[in-house]
Length: 405
Image (cartoon, rainbow, N blue to C red; front, top):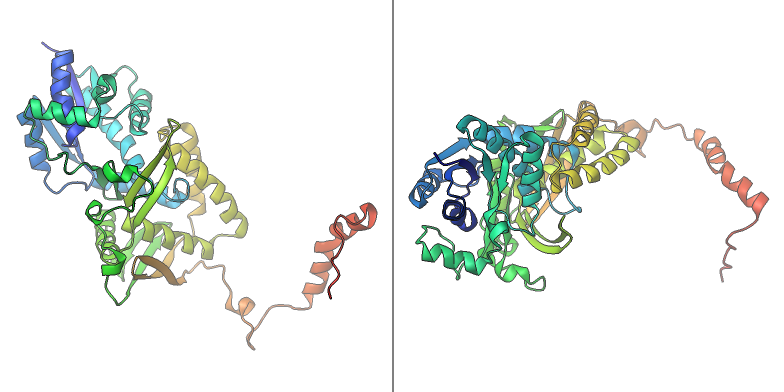
């Protein structure tokens, strides 16, 4: 009996080529595993495609709820945005898929797992490191990386073997998508000077074609987790799907970013992430109302480290778990509502409230309701400036005042 391998199967060019390539090179039985992350409405067609190409079994699992609760929402609470631009949609999905591959390999008695990653992308690291952390006894096969097939050669291989795939030379985009976002690569997008053409986008209207009237949404949070929209309680999958549709309709969610890959190269990446952009902004706004200045500033440091860990394939690291403990503590009082305005590609926060708000109208107002003790300001300023006055007196002027005319 041939050895068995579990292949992470998306139904696209690379993983479709991988089925046939593994059979030819390794003489192994291929079982495909497709994770339903909200990334394709026709999973049955993908399953059938795998069988038509030669897989001995094609498995599909709905892991959308798991994905949001265990990966997306922890990253949202952490404020994880890589390099200040990318909310980590693909990067968050990979450790979940890796975990599913390892679990499936144990159930199916497989000796190896496989993926369709190239040798210069980030996903190869995310898969290999995650699988190595969870099931180091499993062999890892990466047909595209191991064969060094170019995209053109992969297309030729697919044509030669009559593989039933959609990608053609006339439509060269490489797309990965899940509930949290959609990433688009290749073709004209590899030129960082070229504006992304409209045919690259599927979830968002062009801002110029978006409605001429804004839309207002109220998002409810409970302990840092979004739980409702416009007063209606929603489950995590439905909430994200609805926000993606609403925000995308108004042109919100397009990201065009030259990012630093883990392998050392710069790569132009285009994303569509309507729900992510709205929720991250709303969540941060609610934090600004309920966390102290010191908590917010230190959390920014944690967010940067958290983002790097996720992007670099270290989801299953001890440090990420440690950071989660800190993040969870900060979210105890991040409860309330945020009102956002969607208009022509922008998302603006226009209102926020919380039962745990640290904002005091009596202290902030300048009208007759002012409760601030103005007389305390003089003494405070004296003490605040004391060390600086002493240093200037003892060590002299470091900068001379400039005379004014």
